[in-house]
Amino acid sequence: MISLIDGAVADLSLNNRGFFHSEPDLTAWESISGHPTGLLRISKLFGSRRSATSTEPLALPLRHGIVHGRDINYNYEVVSAKLWATLFAVGDWARSVERGTHVKRETKPLRESLKQIAEHARETSEIKKHAEAWSPRAVEVPHQEMPAFELFELHTPERKLAEYLHAALKRRYGIMAEQILPRPGVLASTLAGELRRDMGSVILTRFLFRKIVDAAPALTRVEAECQYGDTAVMVDYRLLFAKANGEVVPRGYEDASWYVVNYLEPLVDLVIAQEPPATPWTGDET
Image (cartoon, rainbow, N blue to C red; front, side, top):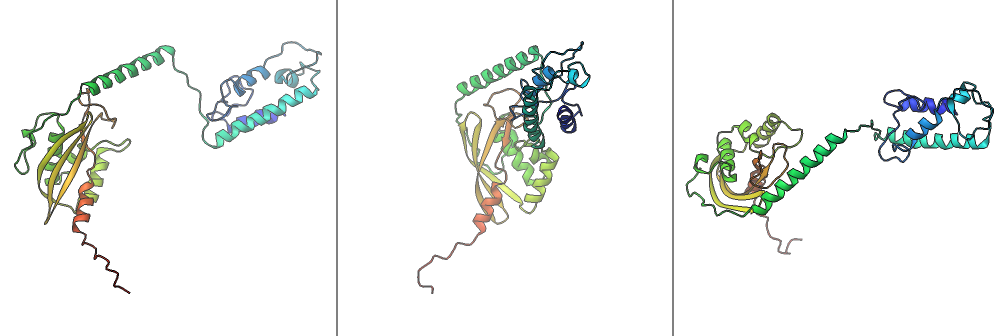
């Protein structure tokens, strides 16, 4: 039984260490047995070294003493029962390994943990401060078609959207991708390829801003009339204020910028605008 337990753990462990190794890897998420106070502690207890031969009755299955002949008087039901219980616990741990929830224990120094907590608290306080200080702007909308983005103030959502739409006019997908809210794990070059694929056949010829509304501390909506060939559609663009990793924060937060969110909406609006109206049902059809 001792060999079975030791070998089973060695076969499933990431580092091929058996149950009675001096540093076994026996932790796992979603497993009571894999808690640091579970099998790991039992391994230390059952693996205790025995330095002298003893004939006293054993109450624990001490591997070193049993295997190396130090503990002779171990043939008791209580010792066997504890080994069986350990085997069942190893089975629970093994199922966690098979589910992929086996993890290597990692502990961070206390100083590092406290530093992270303090940084998170500072960031939370900063976000709250900007959110409470926010108020919607009264933005004057230019009446000219395709206004140059230089007409708008720096670091504003309307300027960001103007940059995006001017890039769309020239079909410069790389610049368009830089103005879109980042997605985790997606490079700007990959997004540019997606834009070329999805919007390559949709050619913007003109645009005109109709309304600019600050809807929330991190959200501005810009209503723009966009012309694609012979079809004009009204697009309700939404822009979010966010960090480079896509995390949304209130306007005014440092190291953040405005990004276009619903960049594919014109495709949907075009399909709707070009779809012929359905013939109303009169009830006369048979």
